[in-house]
Amino acid sequence: MSPSSLHLDGLMGGKKMAISMQPPSDHGALAKREARLAWGMLLPTISAVSLVVALPLLAIFWISFKPVSLSDLRAPEMVVKEALRVRNETARLEYRVNNSSQDAIITGASFQDEIPASITITGDLPENCDLAGQRLNCDFGDLEGGFRERLRIDVAVNGDVDAAELAAESSRPSIQGDTDYILTNLEFSLENFVRVFSASDFFEVLWATVFYTVFGTIGALVAGLFAAILLDNNFRGQGLLRGLFLFPYVAPVIAVAFTWVTLFDPFSGSANALLMQMGVVDQQINFFGERPQALIMVTVFEIWRYFPLSFLFILARMQSIDSGMYEAADMDGASPFQKFWFLSVPQLLGILSVLFLLRFIWTFNKFDDIFLLTGGNAGTRTLTVSVYEQAFAVSNIGAGAAVAVVVFFCLLVFAWFFFRFISQEEGL
Image 1 (cartoon, rainbow, N blue to C red):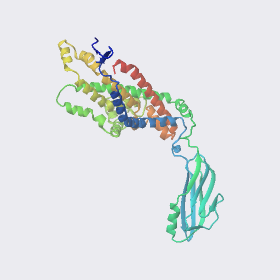
Image 2 (image 1 turned 90 degrees about the vertical axis):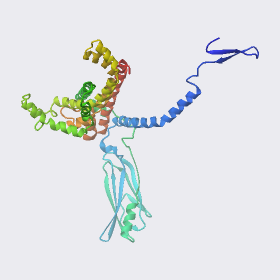
Image 3 (image 1 turned 120 degrees about the vertical axis):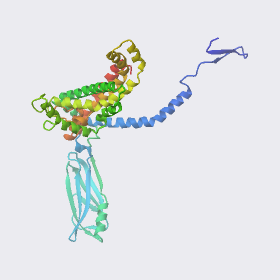
Image 4 (image 1 turned 180 degrees about the vertical axis):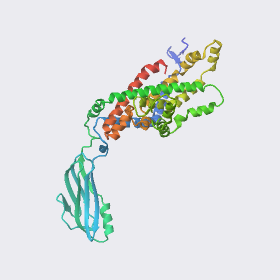
């Protein structure tokens, strides 16, 4: 008899009946219903998060293939503004007509307006307008980009002038017209990417981005590691020192950036004055205005500002390591370096890998620090600064979106490399 099943001899027809004693399957009907219920409860959250992430990303990809400028963000439309002007017992009905776009053409442009009963048209109508009862129809055909025209029609006001003026301006004309909006049509081009990759300084910008990201990330991790080692031991003033270490991270970026620019100013900065008094340099150094020290300085600022984040995570992980390992190592005569290298480092590899991933992505996307310190000048122009300059300084939204797509694919390649190689080595 199998231990997993109980066989009973039945008396009906001499047949055997088996009663299974197997444990219930994890894929039973109840488990499936619970899984469907869980996914159903999570679906609204997953959908909302997906839309928040996916829609802006799809919009950037869409715009990157279109030659879009800042003026193109507003859809071209025919704008008609109506006003009743009364001066010296003469009244005039005015219509200001314009095309909101400077480039796009509006075809079949026309408008109709219902004239209030208190207003009677007495003058001649414009050539492209006609009157049917109290309904004014004006046909403009095709409106070129930047079209502007003012129609003036002499009228007579019956009754109260203020009431007639209010009635005329409150009645909105009905507008018709078709246009080919560049953001919604299906015409795509690689012009933006050609412009980005063919720029003379593209590889210089890419090199500055890689230098700033790699050394800023590694430097922040190393500084955070040494700070965690320093404050892992108990001593008087430990809490105060931990609070001081957090200052660069919690201080407003605009305040600390202004402080650094003032401190390293070539003419009035304390750093230059101290270096010259000590005889280290013979003349002032323009730390944030000349190559290559400008790129080095913004990288040092990145390390100084963001090492507290690494310090917090690493310190928390170090304090969770079993102290028995270190006691056994002391009994075996291990040196402090050996305890650090063979005991602490293997325990910290997991958190260091996660911090490296996060800090690399955040540093690669960093914009405000560089822009506040140098404005992207003196060889500190990174890809994110280029996105801003293309989109707003040059007013080329399409080129800015193309640079943003390049940033996305750079981070995608890094993420693939990280999860393909580094994370496997660290057991993540």
